[in-house]
Amino acid sequence: MSDGEVLSENPIALQTIRDPATTKDHETIPKWKKVAARRRQEINSKIPAEYLLSPTLLKPTNVSKLVETCGLLTARELSIVRSSAVKLLESVHNRNFTAVEATTAFCKSAAIAHQATNCLALVMFEEALVAAAELDHYMELTGKPKGPLHGLSISVKEHVYLAGTPATSGFVAWADDVSPADSLIVRVLRDAGAVFHVKTTNPQGLMALETSSKLYGTTMNPYNRNLTPGGSSGGESALIAMRGSLLGIGTDIGGSIRVPAAFCGLYGLKPSVARLPHGGLSGAHGGMENIIGCVGPLATCIEDMRLFCDVVLSAKPWLNEPSLVELPWKRSIETPKTLNIGVMWDDGVVQPHPPITRALSETVSSLRKAGHFITFLKPTLHRELTDCINKMYLLDAGQEYIDILNAGEETATPLMQWIIDGSENKTHTMAESWKLNGLRNELQIAYAAQWNEAGIDALLCPTNPSVASAHGESTYWGYSSAFNILDYSAAVFPVSSVQENDTLAHYPRSKPVMGKEDARFNTYFGEHGTHKYRDAPVSLQLVTRRYREEALLGMLERLVADLHPPKAET
Image (cartoon, rainbow, N blue to C red):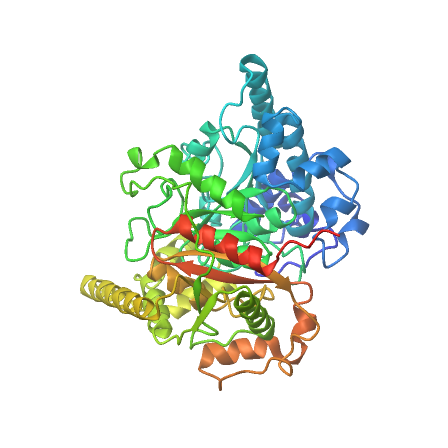
């Protein structure tokens, strides 16, 4: 754990720092601990006493089924949280459930998820129930839903502006910064009838594929709490994996939607930049356009990601955020029955661990049997893509991060320090920044030429070289960040979970060690990888060209159906 705290059996108390008021006079309490203690107490105090679980229920390493087994939710509430967003909305709009019933169910499951994984940055149960009651009243008066998302609880990543709520990006110095207004993405969803019941944790400074900060503590993976749920949208992935929400708002500048979705067995979509609203977020490096992030959904199924995009783009957000492309959502996309799928086994920098290799091999075999064409691609440009984007992230050598950390009198978490150290303390001049932009553009053209030559419809590859990493070991982004610098549309989908035979003996390396990053990840897995990563989901990534989100989801739907064909009736 990054802040040196030891997990207790009940993680709602796990990241609780001793109250400074009880500390002996001679002890000096760092500022960050005082601020963090207050913030964590605010979160925990908002969870109703009747939602608190016995410590015995919180002992297992795998708590992914806790919502179903703990006994807090009624059978009716369990049917709500087990649903998809699309199906639940149909039930609410047909008055099979009220908005208050649905919201109550998700408040309960979110409370359980937080106690098990420390995934919440803000609890808004009371406000959510008031909003849900207003929606029910609207339905009674008008006989119709307020909008397409009427009554659906949606979770929000902490640094996304939601009026009147903290948006700290995990910095102690920003602990009391309050969102001045709803971000456009929140406003569009609220106008469509969504209910916001929680904000979820993100790491210190956002730039990490794990979710740990001095302010909120460490968020854990519900499938194995010794592992990370990913980052920087790791609070979202942990929450949604435990059905504390069916649909959440994430952000992605290097894999921060896709990696958490992959680590927690979810679906996640990274659209191309400027497809969905991206204004109204807290974070460092405002105005830096060498590499730009995007907003996208994390969900439990493909149809819910499609719903998210459809609703948002139906609101014509480009009228309010001029940087967006005017590209309405195309509801009718015909997906060819047979696709040409490019396959990249590794990126030429870091060899994937055995569970990833096995899942990719099995997926390729199944897709071939289903009649799809498979084209194996060599990763000739991926090291250059990774090197280029890594330089773009910290053109100031991390100085803005350092200044914010100093303002809050906190030190960097290990992964934040790793990011800063990776900049090699080099501040880029304007001319050097322009040169990097030129290289980025050249790489985009070269990659497009390779794609054209291969004639593929989509690319299938790992999302990360590892399944969910052990805390502190998520130190390679190349499989996800490459598609940020290319600005390609990319989605993540679950395939299986770690198996007993996912060993180096069964799935040996296909290449010698390719460099220091590869050597480090090879050591992470070692001889005991299947035990270390027990129960972790195994996911893959499907990628298409820019602004082809509709086609991407259509192809993903086709491939997932072919991987899991319906069973014949008997």
